[in-house]
Image (cartoon, rainbow, N blue to C red; front, side):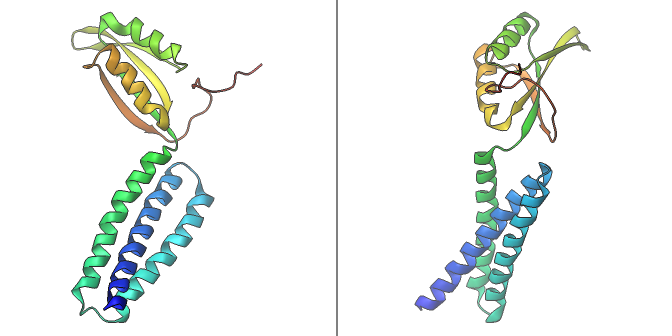
Length: 177
């Protein structure tokens, strides 16, 4: 009985690990880190083969092995996304559409916190509208959103993934001499 429980736990854990690694591998690929992604992929597929062979080796007549396999897959998806959030690798492009009366305040607060802000005037449904472009490190997103929320909880913004950036102003960056 103990061997059977160990088998279920092994299948579950191996699948959770390999799917989590798959999430991290995709993250590394989208960030242009091909060598890291390849190394993670090697470990990922090795663990996957071990898990799958463990399920198939005794036949598919034990439904609990399939349940452990599927539960490990689901858990791996959750863990992988959690790990990705914690790693916060890369940059995001933030477009902010502040109310007219708060444009200056948003710009000054973001710049005070060392975020680079580019403002552009566009044409909205009700006339001219200032659009602010801010590139932030993913790990700084919560801080920027908290700042915006303090200024105006109803402020409109959208966020895009920024695969590659060059130059810019970021908090904590060393100043060039």
